[in-house]
Length: 537
Image (cartoon, rainbow, N blue to C red; front, side):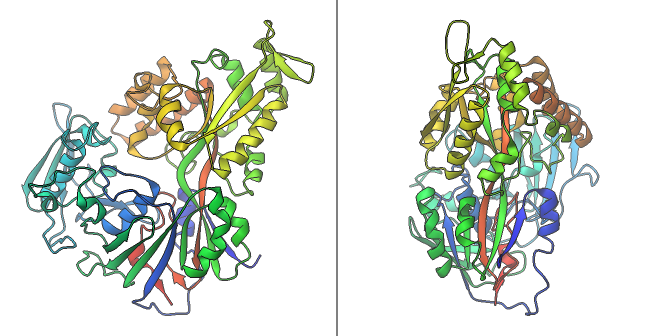
């Protein structure tokens, strides 16, 4: 092949590939110029309180700054702060009443895009926007753990959590400007005009946005880090879905970068000598949700039989060999991942058939299984309509389950129906779905018995005393080593009880022209996380 491809499959890959993604360039860094991006997907608004789609987060990286961010190796580093708070430097401490206190110190002379000073009051306002029921209800997950945000002085903020909150560093990723919402005519809400033209403090300033068409971002001359190398970034937005896949050939002709493509687009671009292709793990894990309230699936032997019938290598081959197998609800390169997870449920259709026999499902006729009442073992798999990857995986699962006598009927539905109705309402048997790393989907909300919808995201209706105990302990654990042990134990319980079947890590294809430098799509922070460092020949 004449192209070059980078497969960013996880944290280790990020640490290696992101550090030295290209051979050393003979060209000296050049400043200035306009970079053109085609994005597959577009946000509906640009307010992180109300929208956190993948497309929105890519633009948030340009517009907003955070208190704490991650570098290319996913290590924590200060952004708006002078230093990352830790127990070691005394900026985090546990109080006698069980609360946790974190002190943040802002860099001096911070400015918003419009020249207003960025101060501790803006940090306090950001918390209020995420939790005030006048603005948003329910509160954004994580922020509701905060009892108060105290402004000590213009550069110092003291945040008090109701109890130990180990993932404090994931909050305040997009600081909001208090001064932009001091109008008596508009409340902070989804229809506020600011949401279409936000003021931030990030490396680029939104100059223009014509929804459904384009967006223009100019370099921020007031940026608190080094001024971006580029003068301007121009976005074009394209439709998603299978119908758009052949269009990528035309898109790359008029763009320097194309973001968020389906990996099925790989075949259309792999021979283009001008391109660097990047396979980026989105952080989402594709899996089968199992509604264990359904009588057939309440039998653990049936759930295990389905798991043993799946060959993850065959799934990867259906996806052009580009999908990394998944064995857990945690990314494989995460410190939360239990390596023993991959030893459960390796492909074994013979054992799957034995389990179904034990569960009372016997093969008859053409091999389909029936119970003693003459009822056929038939299941329905809900999946997103128009998602080519789901289409390919669904067809594989139908063939694989047929080999053990289970008839699988595929049910494509609109994404909003799957996420908004079928999963939370329990109106499904099996569903192809995604786990994400978003704060709204913590392990507690995903698995604890109290989090069955509408309270949380326990769509499988999983109830297990041991899992509940581990999850409750995780909520109160402050020591990372203790958390690691608890996550390992939880992984073992989930593998044993099998409320869901992990399949593969969701991957998108990014393409960049070889004249673009320092473009390193990141598995955890997206493609635009280091946009200030991009430059073009």
